Image (cartoon, rainbow, N blue to C red; front, side):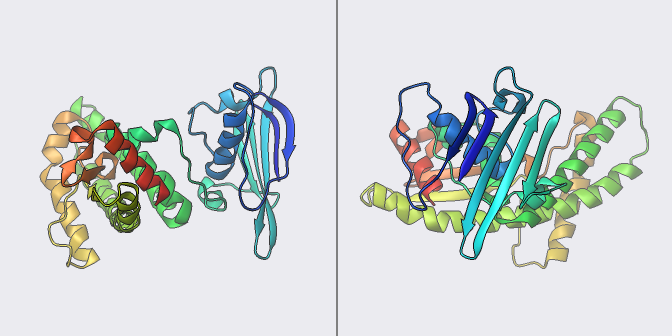
Length: 295
């Protein structure tokens, strides 16, 4: 069951969904996309169409509510999300969750939308967001590591700015931040690396089937911190990350910004050995995006 209150154009609606396939049919501008968006928002606690949660609240209302009763093998579990102009609140089985990392992953969704083409032809930021959204749904540990990394990244960037403008002169704090930064950067890099390998193994045969075996797709993880020897232990790889960060410390101080880390990673898509973003036709880019989403 899906229930909405004051969400977008819906004052109140309750839908009993079929356990297999559900098809929404209706005139334009009646709210079909809003219904699909609400499911995505309930799953990931954020919309794919806007970063401003206030836009999800119905005009002249103070709040929006999405509730879904999820059916599992051993019973049902309700998920609830309240959105107000001050923030949002999420509940699992009517119990409020203090952290989104405890909430995300209970309802897994894969969204197909016209803007999916941007996964191939858009900016690296879009591809990183795609990785984080998909991987975050299946690994709460990854979500937590990502949250910690972003916190340390913000601290490091602030300190680099202070060094650049002469507000700070001691680089000792930067060395401490680099140690913490390296630990989470390595964790995220290794998890992304494994995830992309799995994604490629699933997407390849799908793409081959769609193109009648005329095209071969490869998906490449392009980390900004390139580790040379993948046979090293995790401790040795951590030392390698630290060496890269420390060797480039002066560059980062001059620029006043962190130049290396998962926040600068990218994904590469090759079709028959050619970069799909640069050389692929629009049809090839669409096929690549579809294969990735189906995987």
